[in-house]
Image (cartoon, rainbow, N blue to C red; front, side):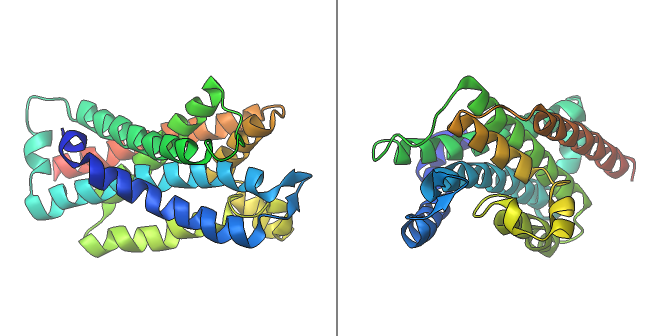
Length: 233
């Protein structure tokens, strides 16, 4: 229902940042090669993973935080006959689909100019899984936040560093080994790497799929725990 009445705002918000990243980095570094591929081929899958992350996280985290702390409507939901875990699953799936929508928009934008991305069903599956991970993170952040500012602080300390460091704009080989070890424990570099491997036609790193699945499961369990704690307060 929200998409039906606000699809123009949702679509515009989903494409502005990715287009600016494409213009800034694509024009500035587009003539370089990364691992034997043109930089634009490296950049687009990373921005798709990035857009999926940002849209999935923000579309869920901000709205739930407002419902819980400002509108005070969240408690009415969790004490209603509707099982609260079903409501959370719906929020997570909704955020993931919003994230996929942002990624598909970017694919539509770049493909008429140059057929630079090889897309398969697994490509969309990785986008969806990445969206589930970060929409779950958005729900969790909204559950543990004590003020509206906590959501923006969480984004500053968690989402923004992943935006620039996690295999999106430059390869991890450029990062010091110690930092690489830490970054590889985060979900976004695995999503970026998977989308890039599919785009290149390279073999899939199934351990990266396993990492995303583990993150989705763990974050969902933490979300259930946090919501149960709020329900019992």
